[in-house]
Amino acid sequence: MPVRIAGSPARTISATEAARLVRSGMWLDYGVTLCQPDVFDKALAARCESLENVKIRSTLTLKPRAVLEADPEGKHFTWFSWHFSGYDRKKHDAGRACYIPLHLGEVPDYYRRFIEPVDFVILKTCPMDDQGYFNFSVTNAWHRAVIERARTVIVEVTEGLPYVYGEQTGVHISEVDYIIQGDNEPATELLNPPPTDIDRAVARQIAAEIEDGACLQIGIGSMPNAVCTSLLESGVRDLGIHTEMLIDGLIDLYKAGRVTGSRKTLNPGKIVYTFALGSRVLYETIDRNPDFHCCPVDYTNAPHIIMQNQRMISINNTTQIDLQGQAASESDGHRHISGTGGQVQFVRGAYASEGGKSFICLSSTYEKRGERRSRIVFNLTTGNIVTTPRSDVMYVVTEYGMVNLKSKSVAERAKALIGIAHPDFREHLERQAAEHRL
Image 1 (spheres, rainbow, N blue to C red):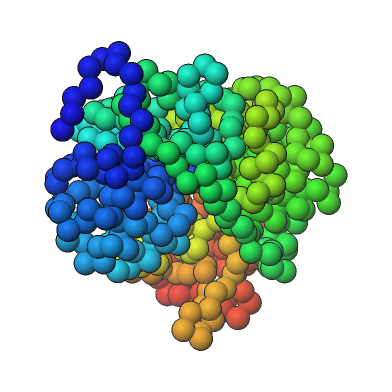
Image 2 (cartoon, one colour; image 1 turned 90 degrees about the vertical axis):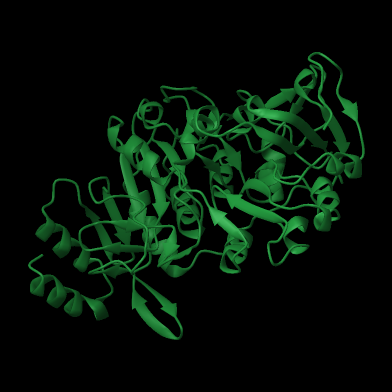
């Protein structure tokens, strides 16, 4: 393959020409969320039959990937993901995607310490700015670390992405090998479903625990988003934001004047995040807005950094919790559905913060194959991954109440969690706990 001489100018080439540079057995990196390439992906898919064992790392894929659609049996491309989207999950179910266990905030270090150099990193970016940088737009994450470890850097420039401010938010043209023209399509939206009555019931309880001047981390999903709506109704003010994912609920708080960041220890006055996903309104709000500060994930997610903000509040979903407080948030048995993400790191960072609180929230029941089941269980589903250990869990919230597990014995935990389970399942849970001496 061509070897670039240090200091030589980047070349503008077609996506087809860029795809021709890929050889069998190479490692490629497609980046995270909206930075995943589209025109390059289609051009590489067109070469499917001429390639073998091409391995691609990705995260939170928001639209179908041409390389996977062109290779349904996985004879040519293997897909690796640091965190599953709905699309990644379907490909995993079909045997086409592999999950990589992690704490999201550690990934830059993985690239720098443990991962062999990447043959190609291909990232969708904003057009080059006046300083010669291609802005990563709404996703910072670990893109700088990948570029440092890449033999070849390709940017797919597009007019469709918002331009953001922050730390290490782009790649300079001096570091780029090839430039290809993107499709200029608008940034993909990820809309939350409307909150349910259960979401609102959980959210009201959490919002009541949040004081003026608190600093928020909100996870993905309708239930954490509903907390933002409840905060709007509660009148709490002077909030700060230091989060992994920037969501529409936080934008609503910002536009309502509830977010000032004036009491933050770190980056006062700034809304700190590592990636943003949501509506067109979200993207328009952060575009060239100096109030928003996009940072690498090893800054946003490291517990020793998170804890420096006083009254840090961490709010995340789980799908199942056992009577000792183990939260399984990323799998359904042996079927992987999402990822560890930053949940554990924010739980630990919030707890260590002065006046901080972490909340794990869930509905008390769910439907599966026409049967209603309890999310609070005696034993986790066989194969389920423990995302947040029992020793880390602080507040657990369902529509039936809130309990704090810190300092509680196993017996006290079991009793407390049974008390916020759906009433139809409490007697059975009590019997199981008694039979096994919990």
